[in-house]
Length: 255
Image (cartoon, one colour):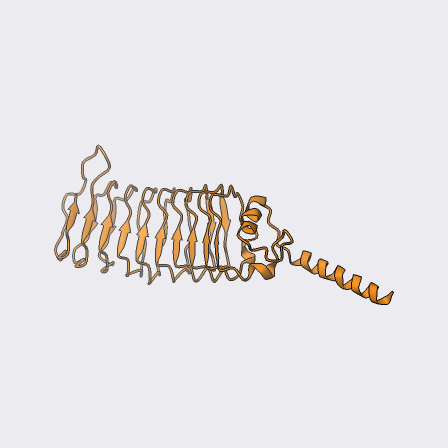
């Protein structure tokens, strides 16, 4: 009798422990998408923290997801994609192993990335972001936030940043102090009137088509190959003069 009692106690404790470790996912669609990828290795219909920590890559695209609450339990996650869902807010703060983030085609107005210090790539096209704090993300190499509502963005102190695409936002200025390795810059179809590109000596392509530009500084950019400065449609250029001295590599130039 004592043996049976002990076995039952151990069984109960085991079940209780599993439940205690189970992650709460308020969005059933998110949970279902995770389980469909085989993360539930013990087949109990839930995802334990011990299962989550083994995952480095997670793509949950086109799954009708409206919340990714619970994702922070995936503490070793490096690659996270959630394209074409119904997300409006994504909180990834403190996920220090995350390197690649893909959230194209949602309805995101709030994206929290504080403490994501390993982040190298951010693709967030076709959302509704108006602000985004990228402070402390010094590993960033490639950022693409096209077709959003950004009014400003600070890309300063990103020494590894090479590719910047912020096409069709509401930017009135470009700030990237001490981010000198930028090679490709797409700021087309924004509201920028003045810009100085001279600090970015590695720049190869600069697209500022569709901005109401009045003044631009590009002299001395010896690696610049492509420069696009055409005004918004049905308007004339407001730029009176451009100093192109030192643009020895320039191959394509539209003004």
